[in-house]
Length: 208
Image (cartoon, rainbow, N blue to C red; front, side, top):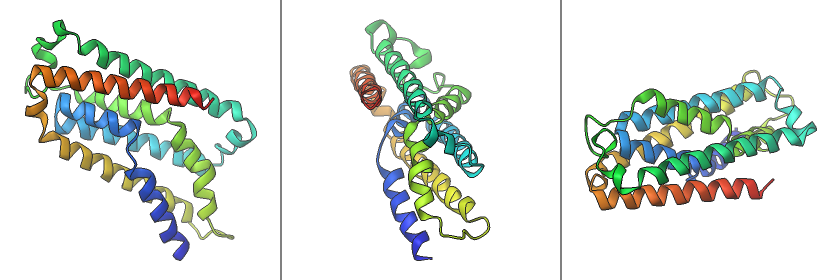
């Protein structure tokens, strides 16, 4: 049982550290409201569950035997982060600021939930940190011989903790939407988001 609590402590640090998923959850919350942020969080949770399932089936063992697979995931994740960053950069241009359909804080301009969900899903499917977590971290907390459904319990703990954390970010930033609806604040936020996502993309590429 002490091993399980140690795993929970490590997982808590992992999910509480803001990263690319947190940035996209915050971005979509400020643009589309609480539901858009939650949709992003749910998409990320489904991706985490997919990685957990692949790891449980032993498929992610191939990553250890074929390191190029992890490099391919890193490259795909970096490209997607860069694309999201360029989208934020495009929205920061003055001619976009007046577009009511995308204005932060507006009710008619709320981002559709499906694109937000797909952003969270795609981002975490291509997130090398999640893959590395299930390949390198989780196995160290599995005792020998492992109890039945023990890996499923570890995976469920990670997925639920990450979902709760991302949902909390969405709830917290939803109350700030009116502040970010101001044109200059909105443009500054889009530029900051673009810089953060492009920096994260460059950081991922730098690890190849």
